[in-house]
Amino acid sequence: MRSDDRPPGLEISGLTLRYGSQTLFDNLALTVPAGQYTVMLGASGVGKSSLLRVAAGLAAPDAGRIVATDGLPVAGRIAWMGQRDLLYPWLSAIDNVTLGARLRHERPDRARALDLLGRVGLADRAGSLPAELSGGMRQRAAIARTLYEDRPIVLMDEPFSALDSITRGRVQDLAATLLAGRTVLMITHDPLEACRLGERLVVLSGAPATPGEPVVLPGAIPRPADDAEVLRTMASLLRTLGAAA
Ligand SMILES: Nc1ncnc2c1ncn2[C@@H]1O[C@H](COP(=O)(O)OP(=O)(O)OP(=O)(O)O)[C@@H](O)[C@H]1O
Image 1 (cartoon, rainbow, N blue to C red):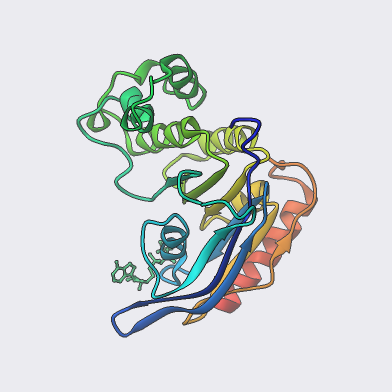
Image 2 (image 1 turned 60 degrees about the horizontal axis):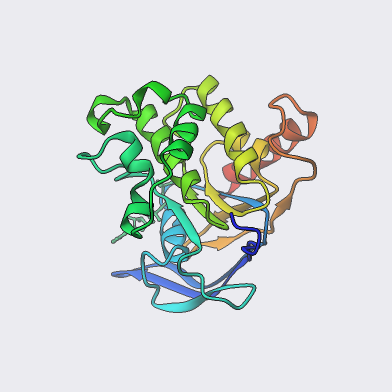
């Protein structure tokens, strides 16, 4: 992230989104504070991915606005990592990581791409095609690509879901370190992950869906999994998610 590229927050307001007769959101408002790691949870199908896609500008809402809190355009300042279609099958892992640069006609920084691949444990798989990688490896390559993009706003949809618990912990730590100070909105189904990484937790529930009162978690991230505050918040989060289901 360039030093003049201070991350703005995102203000989502008046958001209405319908799919046929289904109204996912009706006049929804959500603030994603600048420079913080916000984690969004909620039951399957409540609309989390749809909200993230709209925030990323990948889907148009029926009504509403998504603006950056510094008043500048949001476009071009977001890195987005979806749940599917993570990698282009005909490109090697490293070429997938540097794809954005090449699409922007920039010279790919292969050394940085290799460093990121190494940090997600794929140093020896840089030349592999996605079909030659496991699901978890593909997800790690996609994380490396998201980190390579070096954007002030980062939107991630269940980025660590395919990883085994040891790798997941390591890659969570890496993401927390490399994304420090950026404006992050991440979806997860994992309450422990939410409490390790989130500085602000938002539970989406209902139909049409609305965000609950945010839970603000103090302290530096990533938090240890056995931290007393993590365990206490995780228990309370499970109760909230259970009540909303
Ligand atoms: N492009 C689309 N066309 C029609 N319906 C859609 C579309 N995208 C999502 N939906 C519907 O909107 C609802 C919310 O989907 P979404 O993927 O946003 O939920 P989610 O909370 O992210 O779920 P999960 O946790 O299972 O990923 C679902 O009922 C889904 O079928």
